[in-house]
Length: 232
Image 1: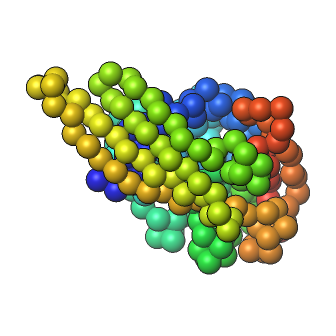
Image 2: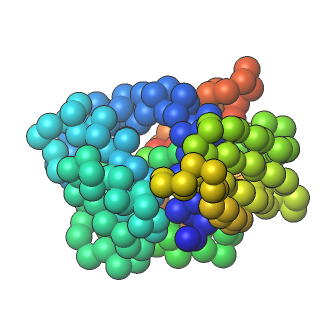
């Protein structure tokens, strides 16, 4: 089991779900101002975002991609158009591309320009790219430390550290056996995220930044920047 699949098994335990609606509202507000027929969600996860916006914009088509087989399995169970693949392999073009909930932060500084090149390639002329990235405060002050959650059938510990603009999270998951409740199966994995300033992010792409909005999801300080780019 890869680290992203371990993450998919504990996402509901680590406080992500509670922040989703507020974050989604910024994307929905932007989409409401755009005329678009097609949207690609990169790093779609379990498809929660796609389900919500598909109901809001029934006349548009939606597609989701993710590198986690477990996440895509969940998305497909919601009758979404989703598949396991890298954006580099996508040949279709879209009016809008989204990367929701700090998906960009999973890309290293070396990977970011190549990824943004793929975004530019799959966007139609005048198309839009919507995303959010974590602030330095989010990595350094909010997320760093240890987290433990006991959900009886699952027990997870997350140990996180931030150094040299790299955020490292070590996951340990114990899952109760479906047949023998006295047995727990252990999985471990490490996920890396990278801090990207808005200025450096802009330099990685030819897309034009047309909107920047600081967001507060967990505390009274800004943990994210919501960004809107356009292919001019």
